[in-house]
Length: 379
Image 1 (cartoon, helix red, strand yellow):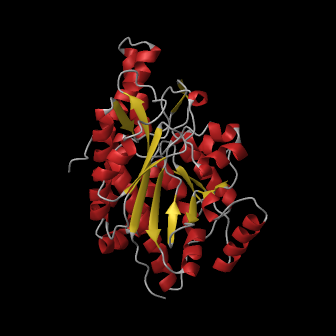
Image 2 (spheres, one colour):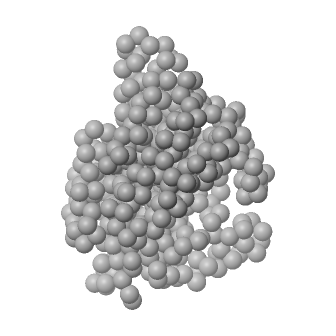
């Protein structure tokens, strides 16, 4: 088996807010997409399901230095163009106070079909995420790594949380986004397959039954891409801080390389019960990394910093080989100063403590998100 390329591509979804009201715009200005694309040097800038959203995607990158340059350029392009229209993007998985019922979906055939099939569950999709593609060219290897990688998904989610608020309420969750997305079918943890042919048979049954058009309509937390020879990790909230986004992209690539190395030595990561992994997934949604995750081998909840250090030790060789040690070690910074969700809650609490009204406190959170989305894009 040839070694996978481990190329990387990152997609981010942003919400567009009016700088004066801090609420979401009713729709993106007509000229904005074209203007962003012109600045983005051939990289992907597209509309999303809702008219108040915009999606960006890097080109295929050979290493994390290329990912960093591409993602900074994309964020910078959207920010500069949006500013000319009196708008700003926020890289957060929910808006602190916007009303989902007031949003309109983008008029495209695929979005029209989604809205028609899913009805209110689709209309509530006022959420944004980050998707990371890693090049795994061999079909069988892609499925083998899919089966094993599910174990690490809650760890990645815990470090990406950016959706504590929903319609002007503190949800009590650090990642409320997944409670919205999980209402759709074909979401959540992936199925397990004995071979690529078994995976193809599942897709074929669903397509021939008229349930989906193709594999792109399967929205698991990690999936074989329906368009590219990649594994696509989709569980993460979109990271407000660009350094956090780069860190998690590097972590995903290193974890997949670790699992590939184990296979070369006739070893593999143990596949645990989906119920157990789902429990860790819930803990990450609820607490981020504040209350730890279950270590299935030990049979008890372990503090997240301890689990993280164990993972970092496992992937050290892979981070060195891929040239992304500094990006991977940024996970310690995330733990030290919190995720976007932690910082949003802190800004909100400080504003209220200083005498702000409820509305003013939520606008302060939006101002924080605008500033943090833009931080670090000039490097």
